[in-house]
Structure formats: C-alpha cells, structure tokens
Image 1 (cartoon, rainbow, N blue to C red):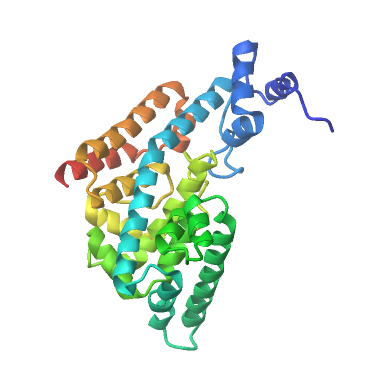
Image 2 (spheres, one colour; image 1 turned 135 degrees about the vertical axis):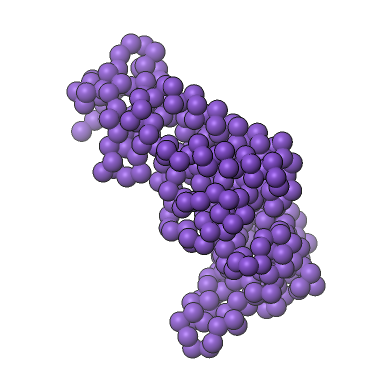
Length: 323
C-alpha cells in the first residue's frame, strides 16, 4: 500500500471522529507528524488507554506540552549527569591512584567481592564486570576517530585515561560502571553528595541513575515523556521513601512526570545548585501545567496530570525554600 498524503491522513482522522481541516492544521500535522503526533498522543501510557480526542488542536496541545516539558528538563539532566560522572571520577581516582582503566578495573570494579563466591549474586556481578570490560573496549573502538582526545592518546601510543572514557560514556554505560564499583567507593560517592546514611544510598543512587537514563534518552530522541511511557523497568520503591524522608512528599512512585520533577529538584539540591534555579524549574513546570489545563478538555488533561500534583509541587517549593 503506497504511503498516504497529508490530505489522505487528514481525511482518515476525520473518519476517526477527529475534527481537522484548513491550511493551519494541515501545516501543524506536517510539522509534528502523523505517526509521532496523532499515533503517539492518541493514548496515555499504553495503547489500551485511548484518550477521548475529538479535535486535532488537542493533539497539537499535547505535543506542545510534551515539548515544553522536555525543554525544561534537558539542561538540568545534563547538569546532573555531568556532576555524577565527576563525583564518581574523583572517588575512583582517589582509590586507584591511577587514571588507567586497566588499573581501575583491577582495583575498583570489584563489586562481585561483596557476595559469597558461588552464589547467584556473585556470578551475576562477575558477569556484569566482564560485560563492562567489553563495553569500554567497544566504546573506545566506536569513538576512536570521533573524539579528538581518543585519537590523540591512541596516536601517542598511550592508554586512553578514564576521564576521556567517561566523556564518551552514555548515562546507561555510566550506570553499569557505577554498579561494578566496590561498595566503599560507592559509599564515598554518596557521602560526597550528602545522601542520607539511614538508607542504602549506594543502591538507591544506582536506581536513580537508571531512572534518569530513561528520561534522558527519551528527551534526546524526542520521545514522549509526559505520560512516562519511556520507563524501561521498575524503580525501587525505596527511592520514593528516600524522597519522602528528604522532601516530605508522599506517594512518589514515578507513575507520572511530576515525580521526575521532584527527583531532579532533589538531586540539584544535593549538588548545591542555587535555590533560584531550582525554584525556576518548579515554577516553569507549574506554568506549563497551568497553560495546558486551560487549553485541554478536563478528561484529557486529567488523564496525564494527577489530582495530587498541585499538592506535591506545593511541598516541593517548601522543600526548596528550606534546603
């Protein structure tokens, strides 16, 4: 079957009960795309939860809302990713007394030693360590002609230092590196960050890194984030308990995007990012919600934004003010 023209797609939408017409809406459909736009925003969470959309302007508003949330998040996610890599790098260099990955592999990436030999956890941790070795070798091969500093060290006949490897690592690859670290090194990282000692913050930081990885990838690839369909796995319930203890906000379970705002604001606080910047993030998010609460029908807006959102944001602002 040949691909449909924009006019044919508009006709199909009308046949689906969605009002669309005129050059303005035709241009919007071309700009956001039928498959990324209508196909993506006709449901919330998964395809079984169809939204009661009856006008193309509602799709355009959902798309604009999602884009604005991604734009708001992006610089803060980059700040957190860079900082977490730097905190980890400092702890690793302090322990290994070397920037050579082979030295670090032998002395720091030894999480498997924390388990009894022969157990499933021991074998799993050992296998993760071996995969990390392969990942780093693949990363160097992938980036050797793309990253000037990789090429520089290669052509000098020198080992590529860990800081250069970190520069090229994705957040997911970095998460696997952190997972393989010996527990005392993880402890020094979370202590440096100021995470609370009454929780297993070493394990919680790993869960946080992977939750941010999913969000970061969704933003980078322009996937939909407003209904958190980007999650690739469960997030430890203890992250929610940590955030309740630290911010006073209950029921943080990452089932909606507001909970990611709470997490990002909390992490920015650990990094001592100024209150004005954290408040600006919260108020920016509130502003987006306010605008689209006016533009979208109540049943569509309510399918994405939970009733407890306003109270969570109120408590979040109180937390920022006190921190």
